[in-house]
Length: 286
Image (cartoon, rainbow, N blue to C red; front, side, top):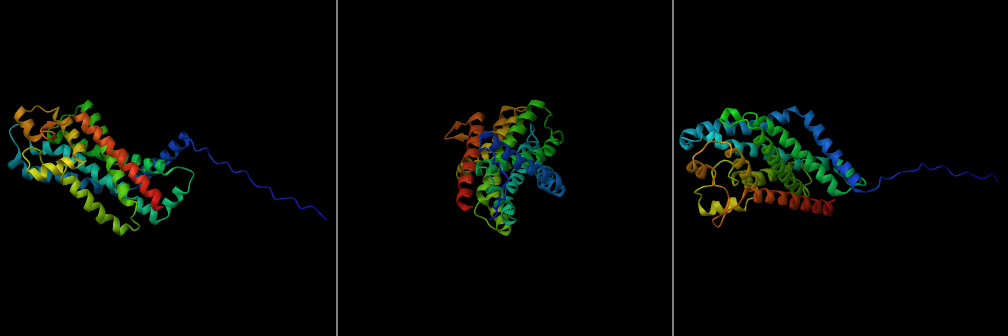
């Protein structure tokens, strides 16, 4: 009998699951978000409509009622509008995971030899980068509302906006973990993001609030992202102590003024907690 030679099998090399491999996987997911952002020009324009309306229409309409001699209401609104521009873009970046699930791309990512943590971290980094890049357009309008173009201030704002965007994107991922259809995602985003925006002090000062509203803003993690942004802007404005106390009183816990570095630390902690919850939820769901 003639011996049958076995068919040769091509060698398959599985990359080592080390830290470098996980970082590379996160970078690939980040790059995909950048490519999607570059190809969707209408998304860039539509995401800027609401912040511009808040800043120039709402701000100009209420300026005669709210503005003082030291600060125009549009100047006060500017940090909040920056935060709002990041908020919705980052939230929809996170919730876009529902599209990835519906079209099968999420399952392809999850079966790859990389961790869920690396995939979701890359998604958050990509969403935060996109949201921060879009906010630069609003940042460029600072001079129109009497906010100075100070390089140090601008760099600080970019870092703070990125942290806030990462936190909101992680929240969006956490919300999208159990959603199977795109139609169910939009109402959930609106139901979650809108209260976060209105209870963050982005559109009104935190001074002289009713008791229940003071408690709500203090418990809202978004407040700790908005207030450092406003504090950074107001540090570079020439205001009287009375005007500063009215328009930027800061966050207080039972009368104790919460320092800005602690507020930033709370945002960083919220980023890590929300990302961890999203990873755990995706691991159970998928």
